[in-house]
Image (cartoon, rainbow, N blue to C red; front, side):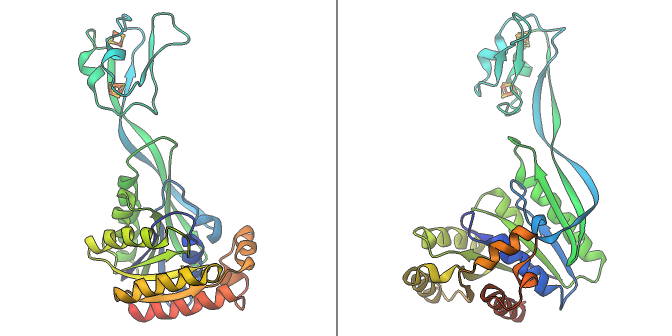
Length: 295
Ligand code: SF4
Ligand code: SF4
């Protein structure tokens, strides 16, 4: 089983639309398992029309909880909370409440409360899903707003997808990773054979590329680059090509700006399935051929 993760140094580069096209193209040649590890803003499912088969709670970090019937209203918890998560209760005069989103679960208030009115417990921070898509099983998730530990949720989704690959005749695990370079990206890279990095010829393209390349290099994952909307700024696209060339980083291809991509996304289809002859689809086909020959 080979594992490819699609990444970008920043959001909005067309990473997910390319992943959806690669899923469509790859599924015609290999048995495929898909994972969307952009758990803070998962949207691959919008293009794959999946049907949910099962779903699971994801338990995140600890949060403090005040038991009102024990609380004496001394205010110590509000004094010790460095995160300003303890507030005066709007409903109970002299009482206190904890803002669940602001609470970091540090337990300072739990230990300082003189009457042990505060407990700390793990909370459901999100959900993860197994779905059937036309291109293969999809493992995906969603974090609740304001919750943390998305790296741990990514690891949970990835492990389930890898286990499915191990128990089936899977030829390729294709992962739509998160943007940026944080914990969820690192968790998404684990075990990958190759990282496809999608960039656009914008002002920060080289800067963003440097950051994500440093990250994947640190974890020993081979990179390859695609330039999306390459014709909107040809000189910057040339700069990106020269940058890749100077570092011996393979360029898998360049995708021209193509309004059909937006139309296909609105309809919920990968552009390669929506219109196989449109320029973006032809470019994605070339990218898949070069990618396939490398894994
Ligand atoms: S420290 Fe304990 S008793 Fe004091 S206000 Fe907070 S919860 Fe109530
Ligand atoms: S657990 Fe820490 S962050 Fe949360 S309310 Fe208590 S002191 Fe504040």
